Length: 459
Ligand code: SAH
Ligand code: SF4
Ligand code: F3S
Image (tube, rainbow, N blue to C red; front, side, top):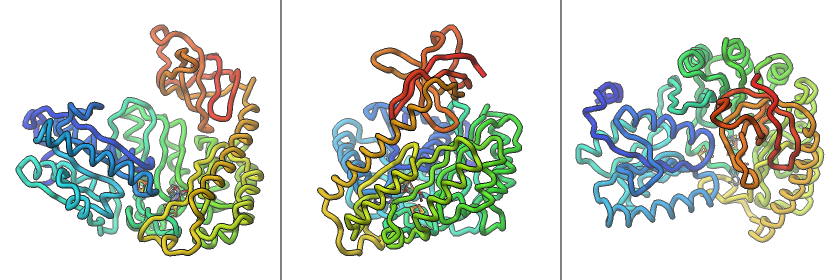
């Protein structure tokens, strides 16, 4: 039976059931989760936060670092009791990156697990559930889609005006530490005309005004179709009703002059770029197979900052890569001082079986990695604190995305074009509905991690 046949069945054909889903990992996984929930909604499943209330329990997994794997294994283990003692009729499935590379083993090892779906098989969830509810068990679908084209329609279930749009999948880069090329397969891009039509539909029918274009290395978007990422951005920039365009992630080795120029000319591009550097040492960068130098990276930052005034840059950094000497680590510290990132995600190197770095020698011990990470993070916080002080007294536009609590007081919360979170006092929730509106606020104080402001107007 085709997915479309299943989805087109009247939902009353399916009893009402609840689904609990736990998502680990990157924005792609969160986006896939939304896709799965959208399929499930058509099969009469409603999301629940309570495992005890769920008929279907799903994990969307991440394999990027050992810690993410451990968290998943322990939570999966806990469900054994639930399945045995409370509800033997619950169905448990695993999706995502661990499922892609270990699906078969997982089903053998965890007897209470019913199915495992790989990263290219997300859209097969209706078919798998049909088979499971027809009495089958222990299903694994972990092949990569071998067709040349990548064509999908974005599915969203949320109310907010922000949407993630997968523009490509996979990764061809094989950075030596990274498992992603093995969990997500080779790069494949959607056609520009399909992505543009998709976004136009979301703007017209779902009230979407802000998009984040997703890929592991968006800078190599379109290669197989003789299209380029800057061309895509130029087309998306023209979509009427769309207000803000973000994208992630960029690989520095492929950040072209055209893309830097786009940052100077396209009015809807956010004032933020996430550009992972990973290390400030040229010798470590070579061992990581990153294919750029620290000098080339710093030059990119200077040119981007020159073209798009006010752009803020964030990054990813790994410490304790195999063989990382004190000098190599100090080069990263030095790069941090020069780059002045707006924020960073920083990690201790994690050994991933199957990657080249796994087999390298001289892995620094965990104590050294922890010390290096702490010093790096402390330095970044100090830099970030300085940068964020510069916001105080200025006005900023934010998209309001909720209400948060600061020192026990309820405040509105929003995100700026440069990706900063601001809490602000404003009209009470009931009097003027600010949720999902763009507002202007004046920043009154700021720390390294969040800022506070006063509401001025809806803009
Ligand atoms: N495609 C993106 C992100 C991939 S994973 C990119 O190229 O930037 C997100 C981040 O996890 C990476 O940028 C890297 O900093 C980190 N990461 C990946 N593998 C890791 C490993 N084995 N140990 C520690 N951090 C890792
Ligand atoms: Fe991993 Fe490198 Fe690909 Fe990013 S570019 S997903 S870090 S292999
Ligand atoms: Fe993790 Fe897979 Fe994303 S390994 S970081 S969920 S692509």
